[in-house]
Length: 268
Image (tube, rainbow, N blue to C red; front, side, top):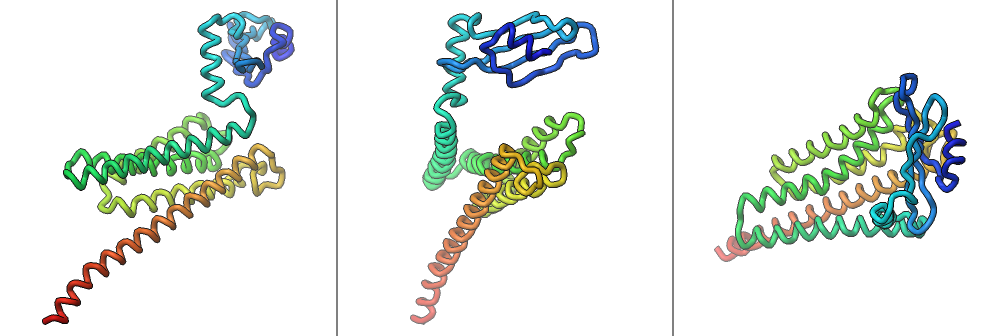
């Protein structure tokens, strides 16, 4: 078959994906994509004719020259295709920390600018920071949830999942632009993202039994569902902490406002 021919032509290629093109028509072919072990871990492709099984084109690291080698090193570093699972978790933690540093830094910087000089540009940027920062989590939760709710037989299913992400993000940005109180919007959007993420493993029961709560669970799917459940719990906990902090701040502001009035009344 196709995999046997690709192995015979390029034994160093480890097939990962086979894509079909124009099958059943003249000129149909298979694209066999995979990786090649080595420093760096590179990727290659073989194109196999669907009628006679012959390799009609190839893109292997050995034939890509210096440009291909440079791209291979960059891709290896970017996708952490070395160091195993611990390094991938380190990349993940560093990515979260970078996002947190960017959002909090931007928010603090805008707050300081707003105290010195209030402007429409600063206020608009604050709203966009919130809408995109918190809205991205909502969009991710909506995308994962839609992937479990959409029927597997739906045509263009992947595009609908992508559409759910961008539509949710757009709604969150618009919500932030028209909201009256931005502080409340932080915990509301994070809570919405947490609920969507936490519900995803449960919603999967409608189309598959391979998930966390399914009868025939798959290790890979269980790992994804567990991660979503943990992320949903963390987002809800963060939203609750923000809600409590904002409520305490409001209570403190009210007490500071009432105290001078009470003192003045006593003096009268």
